[in-house]
Image (cartoon, rainbow, N blue to C red; front, side, top):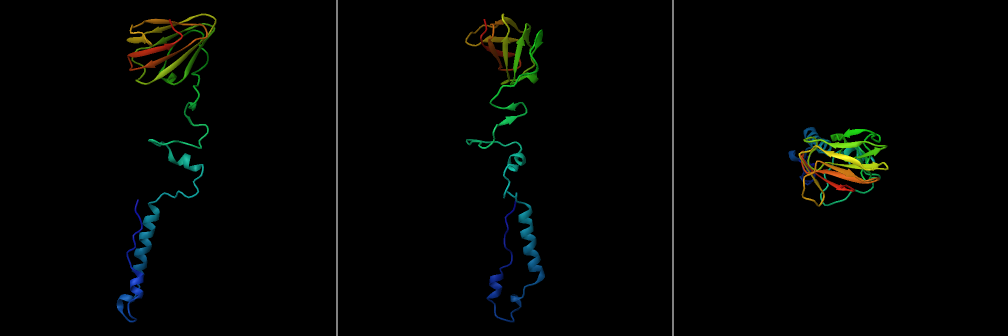
Length: 183
């Protein structure tokens, strides 16, 4: 982006005596000034009256040490960021977690079990599992290393209690920590 910089000093020309050749304003003087103005205008973003269009025009924005206000609800491709969306419908048989489940919850209804695969998820991803049945369900941990939150023992499976929930947090593609109503 460039700022407009005046090239011709018209005021200085005004102070020259009548008949002085330097006092003459040529078309090329005007042309140069108008081109400078056009370049400056064309390289600036018009921010006047953006209103709600500002949100759409900005796209991805990085904010450091600030805040976002006026966007209600704040959402992404999964919906409202204050809500945890359900991944598909309630599971009634064995279900293997998929990377598309990241940030979502999986409901197990009327029976079923969950399998946590190895080398499928990335660091920082997570899935919430909800047991909406009248009995415990099994979460099979096929991942290389699976810890229960607060316990330093690798586990191959856990039971999720009736109406309980568990969060599977991935430290890497081969290590996860399970927390919640599990034994």
